[in-house]
Structures are given as C-alpha cells and as structure tokens.
Amino acid sequence: MPKPGGLCVRLFRAIIALLDAGHVVHYSAVRPFPIDDPNCIYHRLWWPLRVEPSGAVFWVYLHLTMPLHLLYLATRYRVTHAFAFSINYGAMLAPVRVLRRIRYVLFLRADTMRNNRINGVHPAILRAEHVVEALALVRANVVAVSASLLEDVTARHRRAHPRAADVLRNEPPNLGISCPRYSGGRLEIAAVGVIEARKNPQLLINMVAGLADLDVRLHYFGTGPYEAQLRALAAPLVSDGRVLLHGWQPPERIWPMIHLLAHSSLHEGVSNAILEAMACGAMVLASDIPEHREWIDGDLLLPLSHPERWADRVRRIVTEPDARARVVKGADETRRSLSSNWNKRITDKILGSE
Image (cartoon, rainbow, N blue to C red):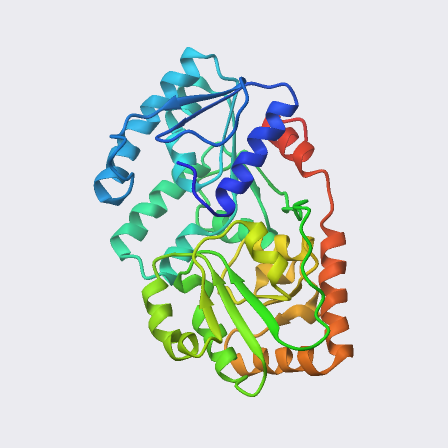
C-alpha cells in the first residue's frame, strides 16, 4: 500500500517513467497508488477495507497470497517485465520468474537485514529474512543505489547467483521549493525520516543538548517504532522548545522553514531526505559511513560516536561565515555531481536497454 518514505517515492517515479515512455504497468496492492493514468492498472489484493494492513496475520497472508496473485496477473496479461523495490516483494515474484521466465529487476535501496539487526528484530525473523533475501536475488538483475550496499547484500549469498549487478544512484528531485539562506539568528535544523534505531536519533538529541548557549532548534519530521523512546529522550528539550516533533509532513511543509538537515544514520542507501535538502538549497551534515562516503562531499561528514563533533560543527556554522560557506559549497557540489536522467535510466534498467 502507499506509504510515506523513500521506497514509494522511487517506486512511483519508476512507474511514471514507464508510463511516460508508453508502457502499460500492472501492480497488485491492498490499496491503490496515487497515480492517475489509464495505463497504470491496479489489481486489488483482497484484504478487509476497514482492517489496517499490518501485523503478523497480515504479513503471513500477504506472503502466502501475493506470489500466486502476481503469477496470475503475469499470465493473464502476458506481462513481459517485472521489477520490485524491496527484498520481500522480489521474493514474491519467484513463481513469475520460474514459470514465466521474464526479465526481473530487483532495486536495492538499503540493506534490510542490517537495518533489522540494528532495530533489534528477533534472530528467528532474521534467519527467515536471509532465506527470503536469497530467493529475491536468484536470477535477478540487481540494481543498487550504492556500490557498498550492493557488495554487502550479494556477499551474503554467494550461491544465489544474480544475473547481473549494477549501481544507479538516486538524483535530487525537482521540488520547486527553496530553503531560507542562513545569515544569523536562530538556526532551524531538521531530522527527516522514519524514527527508528537505525537513524540514530539520540546523537542529534545529544548534539542539541550541547548547544544550550546558542539559538538552535531541532525539528523531527517522521514517525516510527522508536518514536516513544525519542519522546522520552527529548522530553527536557521539547519542554523548552528546542526540539519539536512534527510527525510526517510533505516536503512543502518542511524545507521552507529549514536551514540545515542533520542526518545521523548508522546505515543508509541514498537518503531521499538528503537529496531533497540539497535540491532545496539547505545545508547538510551527515554521518561518516561507507554509503555516504561514496557520494557526499567529505567536509559534510561527521563521526557517529561523537555528538560533540556535530555540536562543534553546528556552532561554527552559526558563528563563522567561512565554515558556513564550506558546508553550503559541499552540499551544492554534491547535488551537481548527482545530476542524471534518472527516469530514462531506470526505464532502461527495467527493460534491459542499459
């Protein structure tokens, strides 16, 4: 079903790119996607409309029924290509791949198993996920958003034998939104995305706590399983107005009020929040992890285990125009380096033209 976040953003863009190129797209879901085009055809996977599609019962039902539903659709409509934007959905296409033998592309946005380990998922579920991941990789044309992500995932499954592997990095979106340029006064900082352990939100709380003498405010945009812990951790800063929790908001409600994005993830693919921030002209600070080193200017990266280093960089942004200019320049150079015809390239990946 449609959800806020990067997976659906990229999935919908891929579908729209295929539609713009004149193709017909069939998809199965329990709720329709927000794409209004006669060639984008929704096939409802039955689930009670008044029952939220979540929880263990739903996920068991989904994994048992969706593979058969996809096989039926592929046969009924003579589907020629299949693609998925996550390991689970890639595995659900296994009957289609085996019986229809059509081209299949698996897009990797993040290391789901690593994310789940960080988020404390039960080991039994992780073992089952390892099997599902191997199933998704077999006979796949794998396209990842970063080389380190591609290596980490495929290295776990030397016997899965994907057909091919390649990298297609995401590009900044054209949102038509501008962030305000910071020239002094209160610095408005954002953290954007699912609130979970992987996003390392405690680092940013500790960062703000170390800036008590500055007029700095941190805005959290998102929801997620770590939200209760974040609220408890940030309670003193929330009470004095230095941290605000907004829940999910569309980009037009975020970036016109933000000077700086602080992105402290322990693991990432290519963050849509960072891409949106750079597209809107915001300053960016990000965690120094292998995935970020591949594409983000090194002057914007900070160590995970040192919130005081993050606080020091923010302090310099507020007090030193030269330090601020370097962060602005680094974000701008990173944004320009990512410019590419993403819609055409992803269409070519799905069709096998690239």
